[in-house]
Image (tube, rainbow, N blue to C red; front, side, top):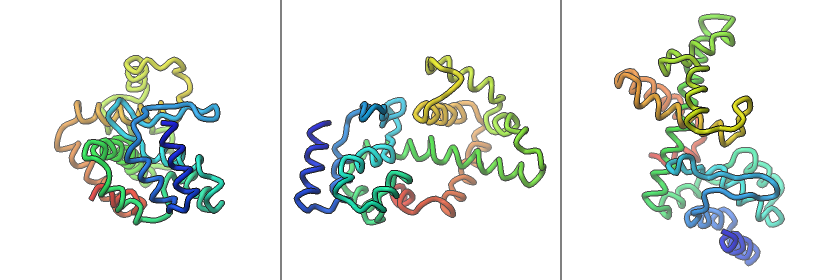
Length: 214
């Protein structure tokens, strides 16, 4: 996608709003992964979930010299553009297919983590030794202990270093757990856990993410 990056830089250099220019680039982006400055960027998980947040971090780095330092730092820290209007614009421009892939990321990574953290809070309320109860969190949510789930994931995903996952591999594990829960959980239990996580997300998640999936 060298041409897209080139167009992004030229558009911002010529005075285009850099928020809009990045959104336009996200809309057209199709590259699954790339190496940039010695780092591997992966933008799709299982060809199903589109990680637009990581892509935003990558794109803002390409126009670093054209934007305020504070804005650059905030985007690289959060993966989100400063204005909520950018995401209203994105929602009108992006294809239904890619928006669906973004929704897969939202449910499979973000909401799945909310389910885990909700369960963590419940354990925190009931015991001072909750850290040692991590196995119980996973078993309660997924019906299996963490080590069994992890071994199954490592085998299926063919991860080479089972002792240390990089950030993309961790997201793959989250997404794998999401699909595992859908396939193996009782439907009523699954719906209850998901609804609790969605309600928690409405209260705590950044509005710039929520607006995309309303």
